[in-house]
Image (cartoon, rainbow, N blue to C red; front, side):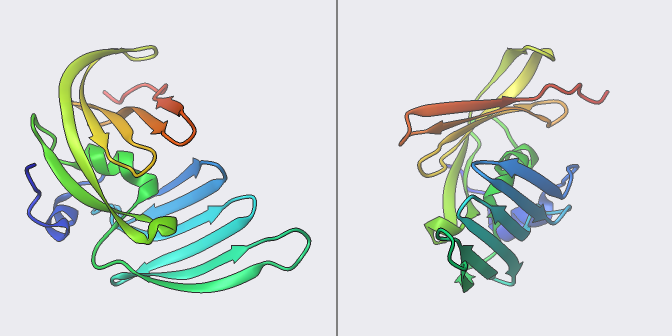
Length: 191
């Protein structure tokens, strides 16, 4: 596996032409704020039916609160300071981080993503599986990088346009639930 020299250098080299705030539904609502130039995690908010999490990434730590609701009783609020051991990406922007990587045949690396429930820093293997042409229902045929990300319990496949670097499709395979779901881009590409 070819390694990117260091996460810090990768973060410094990433060029983000993406929005810095993303809202994701799974199974609640999550908001990730990332540095526009590096995609480094800045803050994370998650609102789920029984839990609310709020974190700010300060230095090498995630600092915030986790509020857990149980029935009609008042929520239990826990202060959290989770060491991360260095720069990190929010797991809600995996597809955008993948699109910003210097993808090429045989590209492979390991990147750290934040997942609170798994201890904070979760290293994930990222690997180009192939470069191929794929027909998309709204965009027609596109030349893409097909990239795998080893998310624990939910490995992902990301299709990245080789010319625009737009994320065209993301598929998650939820192994415990024997379930897959796919999100495909339906808006036109610029240019």
